[in-house]
Amino acid sequence: MANRSNGSRTSTLARLWLPEGAPDAPNSRTRIFLGNHLWLFLALASVVGFAAGLASGLFVFTWNEWNSPSFGAFIAPPALLGWLALRPRQAAVIGLVTLVAAVGGHFLGAQFNGYEQNDLEYRAWVTIGVLLGPLLGYLGHTLRSRRLIARAVCAGLLIGWIYVPFYLGFSLESEYYVENTNTVTRLFDLSMIMLVLSVCRGLVARITALVCAALFLWPLTTMSVLNSVLLWRAGGGL
Image: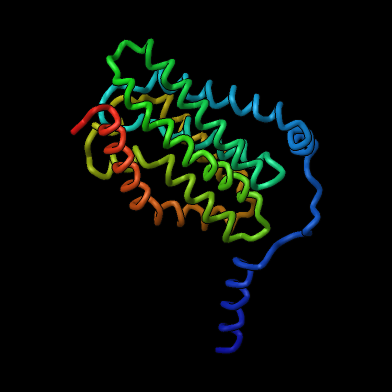
């Protein structure tokens, strides 16, 4: 009986690590088309990123030392477009273009939202976009991995990242982190979380992703607070 139990545990662990499915699974026509027309893919990434940033800048941004209170508009587009890429390097480039375009859209939108803003902060935002954009694209591409644990960890990281502002707001019982959000923005972020979860194949992978998201919340929260410090310093803070 003990041998059977040990064998079952070994089988479960092996399922997490071993590749699933055929190594030469066919790609969709959309992925092949975008992969063969990189200029069009880059244009799409620019438009999607700019639109997401513009929406965030217009509707959910208030000038202060905290990041934009909705992360879904910045995390999900680079990752989901990276998911469409044929190759990891292509996904990284697409993620970079998408996030930098989102920063540009956010800058433009913030000019018309009725709040005073410190434009110097965007020096830091561009740096963040250049550094994190390729990572988000690569994470999105890895959501297609044949290894269950790789899909789950990447999905968990993305989901936890999107949830950070709400985790801070509700865990600290402070409206400061979510005061500029409303039902629409919260539903949008929730829909982005569900979309990331949906492209992570397999029920076990999705459950594991949610567990990973909970584990990642604290380090992601710490990183977001450090980003806020960077933005504050870039804006002229001492």
